[in-house]
Image 1: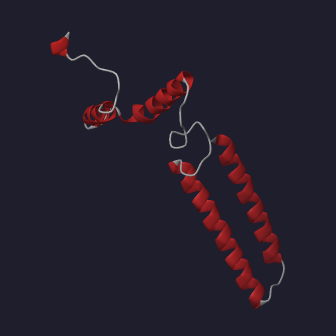
Image 2 (image 1 turned 180 degrees about the vertical axis):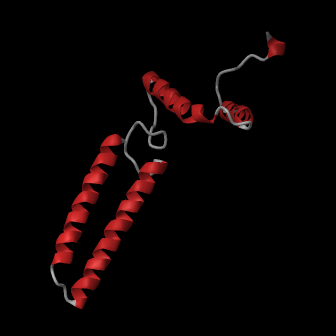
Image 3 (image 1 turned 60 degrees about the horizontal axis):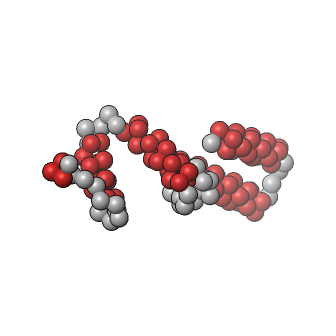
Amino acid sequence: MEASLKAKEEKRKKERAEKKLQEEKELTPEEQIAEKLRQQKLQEESDLELAKDTFGVGSEDSSRIDSFTPTTEEDFQKLGKLLEEKLQPLEKSPHYVDMLDALFQACSLSCKYHILTDTEI
């Protein structure tokens, strides 16, 4: 994630340098409009990429939960670790235990393995 932030910062520096060069030139009104549109488009693309990185959307990075599909035992262990990292910051919330309870119930409904209850032990 730090690499993407550094790359974005470099991109912004280049954009600022280009902008400064453009300001030094005298532009026709049409060129000024075209330049404003170009800069607006660059800003929108930058904002979109930042939002995608923030929310983990559209990333092909296999370290993200949304794009990770486990198949091997190691993959499932990695998924468990990713879930732990995602949920751990939330554990101080008063709703955390209720969420875990609902999550485990929903996930275990279709589980093929029989889980022993207290009355069966």
